[in-house]
Image 1: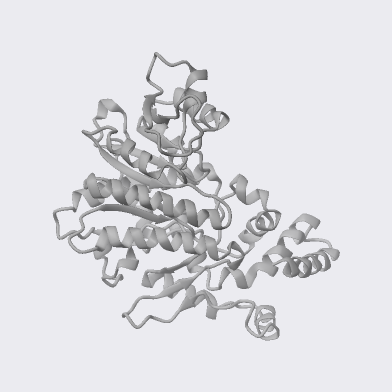
Image 2: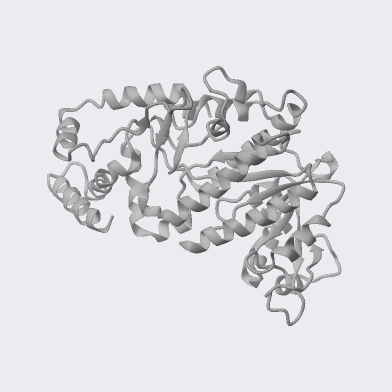
Length: 411
Protein backbone atom coordinates (compact mmCIF):
# COMPACT_ATOMS: atom_id res chain seq x y z
CA UNK A 1 0.00 0.00 0.00
CA UNK A 2 2.80 2.44 0.87
CA UNK A 3 4.60 1.71 -2.39
CA UNK A 4 1.44 2.32 -4.42
CA UNK A 5 0.73 5.54 -2.51
CA UNK A 6 4.25 6.91 -2.95
CA UNK A 7 4.25 6.16 -6.69
CA UNK A 8 0.78 7.64 -7.27
CA UNK A 9 -1.12 4.45 -8.11
CA UNK A 10 -3.49 5.13 -5.20
CA UNK A 11 -4.12 8.10 -2.91
CA UNK A 12 -2.52 8.37 0.56
CA UNK A 13 -5.88 8.05 2.32
CA UNK A 14 -6.43 4.71 0.56
CA UNK A 15 -3.29 3.33 2.17
CA UNK A 16 -4.28 4.81 5.52
CA UNK A 17 -7.72 3.17 5.32
CA UNK A 18 -6.14 -0.27 4.94
CA UNK A 19 -3.56 0.40 7.66
CA UNK A 20 -6.35 1.33 10.06
CA UNK A 21 -8.18 -2.00 9.71
CA UNK A 22 -7.66 -4.48 12.52
CA UNK A 23 -7.89 -8.31 12.44
CA UNK A 24 -11.26 -8.01 14.15
CA UNK A 25 -12.54 -5.73 11.38
CA UNK A 26 -11.90 -8.38 8.74
CA UNK A 27 -13.24 -11.31 10.76
CA UNK A 28 -16.82 -11.68 9.57
CA UNK A 29 -17.42 -15.16 10.95
CA UNK A 30 -20.52 -15.84 13.11
CA UNK A 31 -18.29 -16.28 16.15
CA UNK A 32 -17.26 -12.63 15.83
CA UNK A 33 -20.93 -11.63 15.76
CA UNK A 34 -20.71 -9.25 12.81
CA UNK A 35 -23.67 -6.89 12.38
CA UNK A 36 -23.54 -7.12 8.60
CA UNK A 37 -24.89 -9.57 6.02
CA UNK A 38 -23.76 -8.90 2.46
CA UNK A 39 -26.21 -8.92 -0.45
CA UNK A 40 -24.24 -9.43 -3.67
CA UNK A 41 -26.34 -8.67 -6.75
CA UNK A 42 -24.37 -10.24 -9.55
CA UNK A 43 -22.72 -12.83 -7.33
CA UNK A 44 -20.62 -14.26 -10.14
CA UNK A 45 -19.15 -10.90 -11.20
CA UNK A 46 -15.38 -10.93 -11.67
CA UNK A 47 -14.89 -7.72 -9.67
CA UNK A 48 -17.42 -8.56 -6.96
CA UNK A 49 -16.48 -9.19 -3.32
CA UNK A 50 -18.04 -12.65 -2.90
CA UNK A 51 -14.81 -14.69 -2.82
CA UNK A 52 -13.10 -12.45 -0.28
CA UNK A 53 -16.18 -12.11 1.91
CA UNK A 54 -16.55 -15.89 2.08
CA UNK A 55 -12.87 -16.29 2.99
CA UNK A 56 -13.49 -13.91 5.92
CA UNK A 57 -16.38 -16.03 7.16
CA UNK A 58 -19.18 -13.70 6.04
CA UNK A 59 -22.78 -14.62 5.43
CA UNK A 60 -23.47 -13.68 1.80
CA UNK A 61 -26.91 -13.39 0.21
CA UNK A 62 -26.13 -14.21 -3.41
CA UNK A 63 -28.29 -13.15 -6.35
CA UNK A 64 -27.58 -14.41 -9.85
CA UNK A 65 -29.35 -16.04 -12.78
CA UNK A 66 -30.67 -19.61 -12.38
CA UNK A 67 -27.80 -21.19 -14.31
CA UNK A 68 -26.57 -24.42 -12.64
CA UNK A 69 -22.95 -23.97 -13.76
CA UNK A 70 -22.83 -20.51 -12.16
CA UNK A 71 -24.18 -21.79 -8.86
CA UNK A 72 -21.93 -24.84 -8.87
CA UNK A 73 -18.95 -22.48 -8.97
CA UNK A 74 -20.39 -20.28 -6.20
CA UNK A 75 -21.25 -23.22 -3.96
CA UNK A 76 -17.78 -24.73 -4.46
CA UNK A 77 -16.29 -21.47 -3.19
CA UNK A 78 -18.59 -21.45 -0.17
CA UNK A 79 -17.77 -25.03 0.76
CA UNK A 80 -14.03 -24.27 0.68
CA UNK A 81 -14.41 -21.18 2.87
CA UNK A 82 -15.40 -20.18 6.39
CA UNK A 83 -18.48 -18.36 5.09
CA UNK A 84 -21.90 -19.37 3.84
CA UNK A 85 -24.31 -18.42 1.06
CA UNK A 86 -28.02 -17.76 1.40
CA UNK A 87 -29.71 -17.95 -1.99
CA UNK A 88 -33.18 -17.69 -3.56
CA UNK A 89 -34.74 -20.79 -5.06
CA UNK A 90 -36.83 -21.07 -8.17
CA UNK A 91 -39.64 -23.63 -8.12
CA UNK A 92 -39.85 -26.69 -10.30
CA UNK A 93 -41.23 -25.76 -13.67
CA UNK A 94 -40.76 -22.04 -13.08
CA UNK A 95 -39.30 -20.03 -15.93
CA UNK A 96 -38.21 -17.17 -13.65
CA UNK A 97 -40.62 -14.92 -15.46
CA UNK A 98 -41.83 -13.25 -12.29
CA UNK A 99 -44.99 -13.38 -10.26
CA UNK A 100 -44.04 -16.36 -8.12
CA UNK A 101 -42.66 -15.94 -4.62
CA UNK A 102 -39.06 -16.97 -4.00
CA UNK A 103 -38.06 -19.28 -1.17
CA UNK A 104 -34.74 -19.50 0.69
CA UNK A 105 -31.98 -22.01 1.20
CA UNK A 106 -28.43 -21.93 2.53
CA UNK A 107 -25.21 -23.79 1.85
CA UNK A 108 -25.36 -24.75 5.55
CA UNK A 109 -28.61 -26.69 4.99
CA UNK A 110 -27.85 -30.44 5.34
CA UNK A 111 -31.23 -31.41 3.88
CA UNK A 112 -30.42 -30.30 0.32
CA UNK A 113 -27.86 -32.08 -1.84
CA UNK A 114 -25.33 -30.19 -3.94
CA UNK A 115 -27.09 -31.23 -7.15
CA UNK A 116 -30.46 -30.04 -5.83
CA UNK A 117 -29.04 -26.69 -4.81
CA UNK A 118 -27.47 -26.10 -8.20
CA UNK A 119 -30.69 -26.97 -10.06
CA UNK A 120 -33.03 -24.71 -8.07
CA UNK A 121 -30.85 -21.73 -7.11
CA UNK A 122 -31.17 -18.33 -8.71
CA UNK A 123 -33.45 -15.50 -9.73
CA UNK A 124 -33.76 -12.95 -12.53
CA UNK A 125 -33.11 -9.31 -11.65
CA UNK A 126 -34.76 -8.15 -14.86
CA UNK A 127 -38.09 -9.96 -14.44
CA UNK A 128 -38.49 -10.64 -10.70
CA UNK A 129 -37.92 -7.27 -9.04
CA UNK A 130 -40.99 -7.34 -6.74
CA UNK A 131 -40.33 -10.96 -5.75
CA UNK A 132 -36.66 -10.25 -5.01
CA UNK A 133 -37.54 -7.22 -2.87
CA UNK A 134 -40.10 -9.19 -0.85
CA UNK A 135 -37.64 -12.06 -0.41
CA UNK A 136 -34.75 -9.82 0.69
CA UNK A 137 -36.87 -8.05 3.28
CA UNK A 138 -37.33 -11.38 5.10
CA UNK A 139 -33.66 -12.37 5.18
CA UNK A 140 -31.62 -12.17 8.40
CA UNK A 141 -34.03 -9.79 10.17
CA UNK A 142 -31.70 -9.24 13.15
CA UNK A 143 -28.78 -8.18 10.94
CA UNK A 144 -28.00 -5.15 8.78
CA UNK A 145 -27.89 -5.65 5.03
CA UNK A 146 -25.13 -4.35 2.75
CA UNK A 147 -26.86 -4.00 -0.63
CA UNK A 148 -24.11 -4.42 -3.23
CA UNK A 149 -24.74 -3.75 -6.94
CA UNK A 150 -22.17 -5.66 -9.02
CA UNK A 151 -24.08 -7.21 -11.95
CA UNK A 152 -22.82 -6.33 -15.43
CA UNK A 153 -24.26 -6.89 -18.89
CA UNK A 154 -23.06 -5.59 -22.25
CA UNK A 155 -24.37 -2.48 -24.00
CA UNK A 156 -27.90 -1.23 -23.24
CA UNK A 157 -28.57 -4.24 -21.01
CA UNK A 158 -26.16 -2.72 -18.47
CA UNK A 159 -28.48 0.28 -18.08
CA UNK A 160 -31.42 -2.09 -17.65
CA UNK A 161 -29.80 -4.25 -15.01
CA UNK A 162 -28.47 -1.15 -13.20
CA UNK A 163 -32.02 0.21 -13.00
CA UNK A 164 -33.20 -3.18 -11.71
CA UNK A 165 -30.52 -3.26 -8.99
CA UNK A 166 -31.37 0.33 -8.07
CA UNK A 167 -35.05 -0.55 -7.74
CA UNK A 168 -34.22 -3.46 -5.44
CA UNK A 169 -31.66 -1.60 -3.33
CA UNK A 170 -33.65 1.61 -2.92
CA UNK A 171 -36.88 -0.17 -1.93
CA UNK A 172 -35.18 -2.50 0.55
CA UNK A 173 -33.33 0.51 1.99
CA UNK A 174 -36.62 2.40 2.34
CA UNK A 175 -38.02 -0.33 4.59
CA UNK A 176 -34.86 -1.62 6.25
CA UNK A 177 -33.39 1.80 6.91
CA UNK A 178 -30.27 0.56 8.69
CA UNK A 179 -29.04 -1.10 5.48
CA UNK A 180 -25.95 0.10 3.59
CA UNK A 181 -25.30 0.56 -0.11
CA UNK A 182 -22.18 -0.65 -1.93
CA UNK A 183 -20.89 0.08 -5.43
CA UNK A 184 -17.64 -0.05 -7.38
CA UNK A 185 -16.79 2.96 -9.56
CA UNK A 186 -14.94 2.56 -12.85
CA UNK A 187 -11.55 4.33 -12.92
CA UNK A 188 -12.15 5.31 -16.56
CA UNK A 189 -14.66 8.02 -15.69
CA UNK A 190 -14.83 11.65 -14.57
CA UNK A 191 -14.27 12.48 -10.89
CA UNK A 192 -13.62 15.25 -8.43
CA UNK A 193 -10.12 14.68 -7.06
CA UNK A 194 -8.01 15.86 -4.10
CA UNK A 195 -5.73 18.84 -4.60
CA UNK A 196 -2.66 16.68 -4.09
CA UNK A 197 -3.60 14.53 -7.07
CA UNK A 198 -4.34 17.64 -9.13
CA UNK A 199 -0.96 19.20 -8.31
CA UNK A 200 1.03 16.09 -9.23
CA UNK A 201 -0.99 15.60 -12.41
CA UNK A 202 -0.28 19.15 -13.54
CA UNK A 203 3.37 18.75 -12.66
CA UNK A 204 3.60 15.63 -14.84
CA UNK A 205 1.79 17.41 -17.67
CA UNK A 206 4.03 20.47 -17.70
CA UNK A 207 7.18 18.39 -17.17
CA UNK A 208 6.25 15.91 -19.88
CA UNK A 209 9.86 16.25 -20.83
CA UNK A 210 11.11 14.98 -24.12
CA UNK A 211 11.11 16.99 -27.31
CA UNK A 212 9.43 14.00 -28.94
CA UNK A 213 6.39 14.31 -26.67
CA UNK A 214 6.14 18.03 -27.40
CA UNK A 215 6.46 17.40 -31.13
CA UNK A 216 3.79 14.68 -31.07
CA UNK A 217 1.43 16.94 -29.16
CA UNK A 218 1.97 19.76 -31.66
CA UNK A 219 1.59 17.55 -34.75
CA UNK A 220 -1.59 15.96 -33.36
CA UNK A 221 -3.03 19.41 -32.58
CA UNK A 222 -2.95 18.47 -28.88
CA UNK A 223 -5.16 15.41 -29.38
CA UNK A 224 -2.26 13.27 -28.10
CA UNK A 225 -0.91 14.06 -24.61
CA UNK A 226 -4.04 16.04 -23.75
CA UNK A 227 -4.23 17.27 -20.16
CA UNK A 228 -6.52 15.25 -17.88
CA UNK A 229 -7.31 17.73 -15.08
CA UNK A 230 -9.93 20.37 -15.74
CA UNK A 231 -9.90 23.75 -13.98
CA UNK A 232 -11.98 24.15 -10.85
CA UNK A 233 -15.74 24.18 -11.35
CA UNK A 234 -18.12 27.04 -10.63
CA UNK A 235 -19.04 25.28 -7.38
CA UNK A 236 -15.70 26.11 -5.84
CA UNK A 237 -12.23 24.69 -5.64
CA UNK A 238 -13.04 21.20 -6.90
CA UNK A 239 -10.51 19.84 -9.43
CA UNK A 240 -12.04 17.49 -12.00
CA UNK A 241 -10.14 14.70 -13.74
CA UNK A 242 -11.22 13.28 -17.10
CA UNK A 243 -10.25 9.61 -17.42
CA UNK A 244 -13.01 8.53 -19.80
CA UNK A 245 -12.29 5.93 -22.46
CA UNK A 246 -15.07 6.70 -24.90
CA UNK A 247 -14.97 3.26 -26.49
CA UNK A 248 -16.82 1.96 -23.42
CA UNK A 249 -19.88 3.67 -24.83
CA UNK A 250 -22.75 5.86 -23.64
CA UNK A 251 -24.72 3.00 -22.08
CA UNK A 252 -21.83 2.19 -19.79
CA UNK A 253 -21.44 5.78 -18.60
CA UNK A 254 -25.19 6.24 -18.13
CA UNK A 255 -25.38 3.11 -15.98
CA UNK A 256 -22.49 4.34 -13.85
CA UNK A 257 -24.11 7.80 -13.54
CA UNK A 258 -27.21 6.12 -12.12
CA UNK A 259 -25.11 4.41 -9.46
CA UNK A 260 -23.24 7.62 -8.60
CA UNK A 261 -26.53 9.50 -8.27
CA UNK A 262 -28.06 6.92 -5.92
CA UNK A 263 -24.89 6.87 -3.81
CA UNK A 264 -24.84 10.66 -3.41
CA UNK A 265 -28.56 10.99 -2.71
CA UNK A 266 -28.44 8.22 -0.12
CA UNK A 267 -25.30 9.48 1.62
CA UNK A 268 -25.83 13.23 1.54
CA UNK A 269 -29.55 13.71 0.99
CA UNK A 270 -31.76 15.52 3.46
CA UNK A 271 -31.67 13.83 6.87
CA UNK A 272 -29.87 10.81 5.40
CA UNK A 273 -27.65 8.70 7.62
CA UNK A 274 -27.22 5.84 5.15
CA UNK A 275 -23.83 4.14 5.07
CA UNK A 276 -22.57 4.21 1.46
CA UNK A 277 -19.41 2.59 0.10
CA UNK A 278 -18.67 3.72 -3.47
CA UNK A 279 -14.95 3.52 -4.14
CA UNK A 280 -13.07 3.83 -7.41
CA UNK A 281 -11.94 0.28 -8.25
CA UNK A 282 -8.85 -0.41 -10.36
CA UNK A 283 -8.82 -1.42 -14.00
CA UNK A 284 -7.92 -5.12 -13.88
CA UNK A 285 -7.00 -8.00 -16.16
CA UNK A 286 -10.40 -9.68 -15.88
CA UNK A 287 -11.61 -12.26 -18.39
CA UNK A 288 -14.15 -9.82 -19.81
CA UNK A 289 -11.38 -7.28 -20.48
CA UNK A 290 -9.03 -9.82 -22.01
CA UNK A 291 -11.82 -11.15 -24.24
CA UNK A 292 -11.74 -7.75 -25.99
CA UNK A 293 -8.43 -7.89 -27.82
CA UNK A 294 -8.16 -4.13 -28.14
CA UNK A 295 -8.63 -3.45 -24.44
CA UNK A 296 -6.31 -6.34 -23.62
CA UNK A 297 -3.57 -4.70 -25.69
CA UNK A 298 -4.18 -1.27 -24.18
CA UNK A 299 -4.04 -2.64 -20.62
CA UNK A 300 -0.88 -4.61 -21.37
CA UNK A 301 0.93 -1.56 -22.71
CA UNK A 302 -0.28 0.96 -20.13
CA UNK A 303 2.63 0.37 -17.74
CA UNK A 304 4.87 2.35 -20.11
CA UNK A 305 3.22 5.53 -18.80
CA UNK A 306 4.03 5.83 -15.09
CA UNK A 307 2.50 5.84 -12.56
CA UNK A 308 -0.09 3.65 -14.32
CA UNK A 309 -0.37 0.07 -13.04
CA UNK A 310 -3.12 -2.36 -14.07
CA UNK A 311 -4.15 -4.82 -11.35
CA UNK A 312 -4.68 -8.55 -11.25
CA UNK A 313 -8.34 -9.30 -10.40
CA UNK A 314 -7.42 -11.34 -7.32
CA UNK A 315 -5.62 -8.32 -5.89
CA UNK A 316 -8.50 -6.00 -6.78
CA UNK A 317 -11.09 -8.26 -5.13
CA UNK A 318 -9.29 -8.34 -1.79
CA UNK A 319 -8.35 -4.66 -1.78
CA UNK A 320 -11.84 -3.40 -2.66
CA UNK A 321 -13.45 -5.69 -0.07
CA UNK A 322 -11.11 -4.29 2.58
CA UNK A 323 -12.11 -0.76 1.55
CA UNK A 324 -15.78 -1.74 1.79
CA UNK A 325 -15.21 -2.95 5.35
CA UNK A 326 -13.34 0.26 6.13
CA UNK A 327 -16.32 2.32 4.92
CA UNK A 328 -18.78 0.31 6.99
CA UNK A 329 -16.62 0.72 10.09
CA UNK A 330 -15.77 4.39 9.63
CA UNK A 331 -19.21 5.65 8.65
CA UNK A 332 -20.91 3.64 11.38
CA UNK A 333 -18.47 4.98 13.97
CA UNK A 334 -19.08 8.56 12.79
CA UNK A 335 -22.82 8.14 12.26
CA UNK A 336 -23.71 10.24 15.28
CA UNK A 337 -20.91 12.71 14.72
CA UNK A 338 -22.55 15.33 12.43
CA UNK A 339 -23.07 12.68 9.70
CA UNK A 340 -19.64 13.47 8.30
CA UNK A 341 -16.85 10.96 8.04
CA UNK A 342 -13.38 11.81 9.26
CA UNK A 343 -11.86 11.36 5.82
CA UNK A 344 -14.45 13.65 4.23
CA UNK A 345 -13.36 16.38 6.66
CA UNK A 346 -9.84 16.45 5.19
CA UNK A 347 -8.69 20.01 4.69
CA UNK A 348 -7.92 19.54 0.99
CA UNK A 349 -11.50 18.55 0.10
CA UNK A 350 -14.33 21.02 -0.34
CA UNK A 351 -17.62 20.02 1.30
CA UNK A 352 -19.38 18.54 -1.74
CA UNK A 353 -21.19 15.23 -2.47
CA UNK A 354 -18.77 14.43 -5.32
CA UNK A 355 -16.08 13.93 -2.68
CA UNK A 356 -17.73 10.60 -1.86
CA UNK A 357 -15.76 9.28 -4.86
CA UNK A 358 -12.63 11.34 -4.17
CA UNK A 359 -11.83 9.45 -0.98
CA UNK A 360 -9.96 6.12 -0.76
CA UNK A 361 -9.77 5.54 -4.56
CA UNK A 362 -7.74 2.88 -6.36
CA UNK A 363 -7.37 4.68 -9.70
CA UNK A 364 -4.38 2.85 -11.24
CA UNK A 365 -2.45 6.13 -11.33
CA UNK A 366 -4.85 7.65 -13.88
CA UNK A 367 -5.55 10.68 -11.66
CA UNK A 368 -1.86 11.60 -11.37
CA UNK A 369 -0.77 10.65 -14.90
CA UNK A 370 -1.05 14.16 -16.33
CA UNK A 371 -2.75 13.08 -19.56
CA UNK A 372 -6.15 11.84 -20.61
CA UNK A 373 -6.08 8.07 -21.03
CA UNK A 374 -7.85 8.27 -24.38
CA UNK A 375 -5.22 10.68 -25.71
CA UNK A 376 -2.55 8.01 -25.23
CA UNK A 377 -4.29 5.01 -26.77
CA UNK A 378 -2.27 4.89 -30.01
CA UNK A 379 0.98 5.28 -28.10
CA UNK A 380 0.01 2.58 -25.59
CA UNK A 381 -0.73 0.21 -28.49
CA UNK A 382 2.58 1.11 -30.14
CA UNK A 383 4.50 0.40 -26.93
CA UNK A 384 2.71 -2.94 -26.61
CA UNK A 385 3.93 -4.11 -30.03
CA UNK A 386 7.39 -2.66 -29.45
CA UNK A 387 7.58 -4.74 -26.26
CA UNK A 388 6.50 -7.82 -28.21
CA UNK A 389 9.02 -7.39 -31.02
CA UNK A 390 11.86 -6.25 -28.77
CA UNK A 391 13.07 -2.79 -27.94
CA UNK A 392 16.56 -3.53 -29.18
CA UNK A 393 15.42 -4.06 -32.77
CA UNK A 394 15.19 -1.18 -35.20
CA UNK A 395 12.07 -2.70 -36.78
CA UNK A 396 10.23 -2.47 -33.47
CA UNK A 397 9.48 1.21 -33.93
CA UNK A 398 8.00 0.68 -37.37
CA UNK A 399 5.92 -2.27 -36.14
CA UNK A 400 4.65 -0.25 -33.20
CA UNK A 401 3.73 2.81 -35.23
CA UNK A 402 2.08 0.69 -37.92
CA UNK A 403 0.09 -1.29 -35.37
CA UNK A 404 -0.99 1.91 -33.66
CA UNK A 405 -2.22 3.33 -36.96
CA UNK A 406 -4.26 0.21 -37.64
CA UNK A 407 -5.67 0.23 -34.11
CA UNK A 408 -6.55 3.91 -34.45
CA UNK A 409 -8.94 3.05 -37.28
CA UNK A 410 -10.60 0.49 -35.01
CA UNK A 411 -10.76 2.98 -32.14
